Image (cartoon, rainbow, N blue to C red):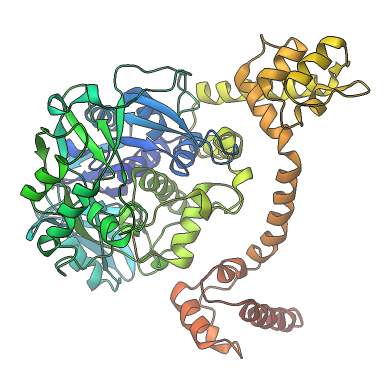
Length: 627
């Protein structure tokens, strides 16, 4: 009797943050889905830091939530500390960052997986892709089981041929202590995929009771209630502070003295590491003029005494790590529970993917997460959600979902990957997004929830909650447009105290709100609106203040979309375009863009090249129209 009966609609390989979202999206859209994970105890494992969100990453979490994913809901359910970041900057880059209980996070996700209809969860190692005539047929496991599937989503993370490094000691491993997926890379190569190496790392873990907390400045959770999910009640959190400290000259001298035992500086590690999250030894070597670097001590769980040392990623030998930790303020007697390590792993350069995350070489095979060269839980989850959605849509014969750069951070992320590729772990940054005012933390629901609803990923209760919230916002905006503010003595006095001149004539509350000094709270005090929904008021305030800038960005988007609406036929012969630069020709043939707009975003393709492409397409269009 076969272990797996019948044909699955979708098989998801890997149960990390990307694999979990892919499997849940697929199953909830009605597809018979199987999630294969190396070890069930590492579902949605926080293998590195215990945090969620931050600049750009927080935006991705909100977008996953608006589309019907689970990362934000589980984050809210397991948060220990919550803080707003970039509060001194504009609303486009403000977002939340949460410290999560990584034990409870995994358990919560596992329960969701095991109680979702249409979804089977199984422990097993996938060793081979089953491909026939360029199309996915299924997968095979280490136990010899052939599993037939119409679509496969590969989300193997850092487990793919993973090798861990601690000092000059190296060994096959996924995240430290986990089994690697050692044979799947060979199968990918046999199917013609380019497979390359990347490197990431993590920090030592300390015993909380051996840290001198009384000597350290503590960072508490924000007093204002908050939540990542549009559907979670806002809460405040207490009892799990972090501490911010800094490395010092002793720390740096110790690192320099032991670089001869570092796998990073002795040539043992070949994979390229993350530029935006380098190891502490890399920071010390690259920035010799700096006397210190910030470090954060962060709780990992309410169920243990383990502390994560944020910004101290290292692969130095264990004895050096112990000495290194004890140069830090408050850690002079700290006990190291787990060493930091570097991990090298295989990934597929993502220019081998279509914009909907299906591989170009094998139809029906989708990839997500660190398999595509990204870093971070948030990047993985958002790609996994999109891959799961598109696996089902292509199975049904429906058009896949492709989000534009003006529609979502997820659109920027995927477009960067499939168009430009990456040779280092890709991290989502606000600076990568050219339409930031359109893609704020506070409007992810308006941008993406209607799509999540059409896909069947937002339930009736959630949709009703959103539509009621939007009604309150729209109603408040209409009332502010109608409410006239008369420059009475009280109004003049309040405006003067806020360093804003009083109007000579009556004006609407919405006109007054456009002034930079007038926040929602000040307008509420001025107009007697303190009892109004503050969340709705904050949203209307941002929309009002930045209306002109938003309209300008929307005009820019409209101009750029004209290029994205010019398709490049599948199999287009770029060599038939006279005058293309050799570098441009090489990159166009490698990426094989789907539209003229995508071609223009390939690094090295010039405006002159685009003009040549457009001219060639126009000549062919006219010729075809003449018959």
